[in-house]
Length: 431
Image (tube, rainbow, N blue to C red; front, side, top):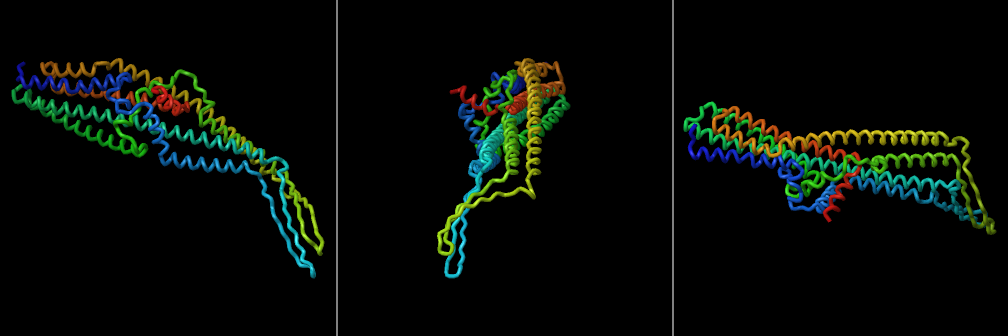
């Protein structure tokens, strides 16, 4: 079969167009090269600045600001429990008895006889701990949400880039088909097949670009300072945290918060029990009565006869028992969630690594081989287009596997409660 020189040159260019992208997709979906998914270091941002930047961006999110204000309110309430229970009471009385003006000035003080204040102070400590750990858990959940969004963006961006590359390849192919058709090498059917494939790819590219725009809008809502050049996750992030190491869930913020809430309600039950015991009030008064100086001492004690508050004490104990059961449930749920996330991550890691091994260098070789076979007439145009589609699906599978693998890693870090530690380690490693 004979070809014009221009046609042959164009075919060689077409064979080189997609391999350039194919190599980046197959080998840099590999964490060792990361070409299709540019790392943050390549975007001009160091690991240290990226970690600090991410923390600052998350802390500026309205949800986190609102949570911090709520924590401050709870801390203020806890500080109030450190105060004394009873304030002194000032009382005065004036009367006129004949020619005498009688008056008294008294000060009364209820005594915390049963030391309820110390129990309230312990309760305040647990309230502070619960508030801090709940905030930490919310911060980790927001961090995981942001990381998932960044992973989704890099996936959608890679798919959009793949669609653009295929569209460019089909445009080049269409030009070659038209040239070969003029020379009599191909029929009108081949040209129609190329047109149909290009029309389908135009729709795919448009959808990919639209999805990319939506994802970027969502990212900017989460991270106002985000941009594609410097806001991507450093590749080093994915190698931190050994999934095979045992995890101590005793320090998980969700578990610590549940335990602190239980302990706070246990102290509330103690307070309710102490409320069944009345506190005495002592008073000292001085004044004049009938022209004589008068000094008096007073004492009063509530008599819990009509209501001994035993029902309230029993209810507080029952509520504490309920929260204890919830605390045990949180531990159990967290253990199984951690096991599930670990199993999912290991499975995706294995399949993604297998994809890397299978596709290593094949994307480029396959594209060149297909172009050469189509050029020599060994395969028809329809077979060539079908093979290009299969190649594209293979690259797309790699992008999706990488996304699932990274998402599973983020989920596992969230279940361990150590996302913040990994980000801090990322910064420390590059110091």
